[in-house]
Image (cartoon, rainbow, N blue to C red):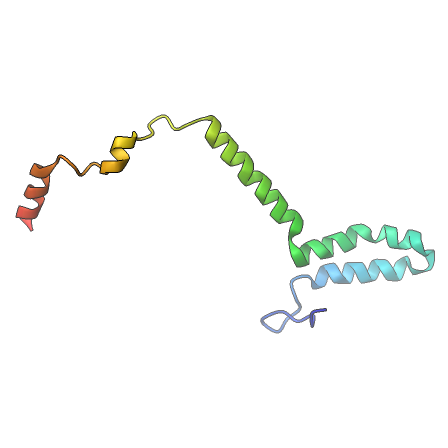
Length: 103
């Protein structure tokens, strides 16, 4: 387990969640297995603070939904393949020579 100290010497970022878990265990210690079940939400919050698994899953789902929406609605002004290949530079010798003449 971690030392409980943060990077700057203060309490770690999950210290408050750990205090909630300990407080729950102290209050519900005499109830046996049902006491542990009462503390599961606090324990899940502590684990989420440590590992960010729920947040990562939510982020992946949002990214997948965004990609799906982007694929369903292509851009209106999307460049054509010829424009992408040439980058708009081929066939513009006059403009290139004018820019080079100024330099």
